[in-house]
Image (cartoon, rainbow, N blue to C red; front, side, top):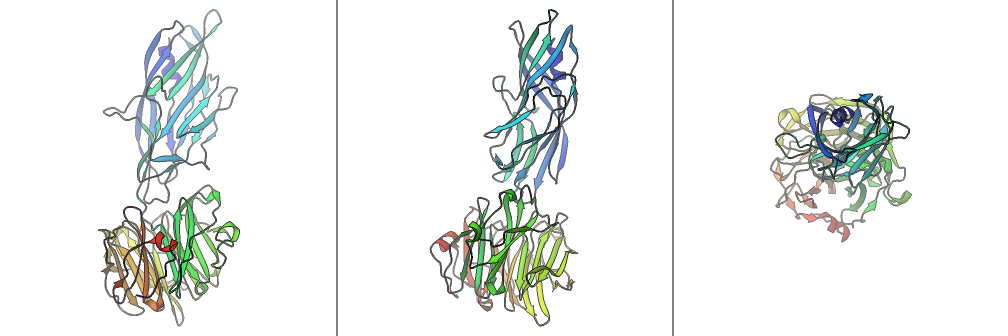
Length: 532
């Protein structure tokens, strides 16, 4: 009799969903190898084949969203009233276990959540987590038509590659699905039959079926952001989801690292950009976060550099969210003569521009304007030069439709007047970097073979061609660049393919560079940058 009960009692149809973007896969048949002990003491092995799963494949182009948010929505199921000549008294203690891949972890500040569900008995369903093993328990008793609660999870992928949400369990003693079937005999007594199941491997392999798959590529944005004004440079880095800031003046010392305050609800620190204001006295920091309150939105931190410990960390005024600025790539920000320009790549692949002046975000052009004619999946870059009638902005971006060619567009952001996108004669797999000092501009781009290349030009003049920064360093992420000393001193920061951060300093007009130095060592040892 139990042979007829188990397939129907456990025919759970799981519909998986997750935050966009989603590529839905084909339905997957999940077979269960079930073991039950009958009232007579006889052990029996059963096969459960009718658990259907719709697989979801979630893939992000950058590492800013190293999260998988699978949502398991269970469809209503109906239990039979009778099993043969015995009345079904109920199904109780239904327990489903899920596990995650080794390269993933549970997000502590976003615990698993249950919602909805119907006709599940007298007690509420619960979800727990222990070392990456999620356990859904429905005490029951369950009778008639019921719906299990929707289960929402948040999982962080800790290293590039594929991470999966899996059905746990590998044997009858280590099951992924358990429940107790209670039947009422002719004598009126209830008999409890415990059932333990584990998922069968996918046909033709030894792997357990994946309920959701997340693919995270290596981060292709710079973990270090540089901004400069006059002879001052500021750097912001990310370590363990926390921003840190350091600064130095040409012919001066570095200040050491200062922690930047972070609201816990903001979640994972993402791509960041930084610009100096008021001649280097104040700083703008823009970052993309992935959390409960600012999911993928840009936020801004601004404050004076002479008060780095305000509010328990740098940031006098705290973080402020920019509405309608969802992105998964590094933003870009520039500032000169009290004119500020923010750029980011929106989810449709357009470069979006927002500009203002006087430190007031509503003081110039309060609208976010798409720059037409180019589609990209990487973060843009911007460099700004002061001219007689205002500012001249140079926007650099990687063109997805031209095989990764780096393009430049220049114009007046306040008047929304642009010259159009033009090729810079170099191809890259990641976004560009740019900066300006006086009337001189510099661009830094990672070539497809990992070399760090630079090009410079004066306002109104032609560029001087792409040259490699000497040394053996190779990288596959966007670099950061700062420019001081009236266009005679450039700082380049880069993360190598081993994950170490380096800084180089040189004069682009002569091609002389001091060589790559470990960035952390230079900060901790009070590095004193000098003109080359």
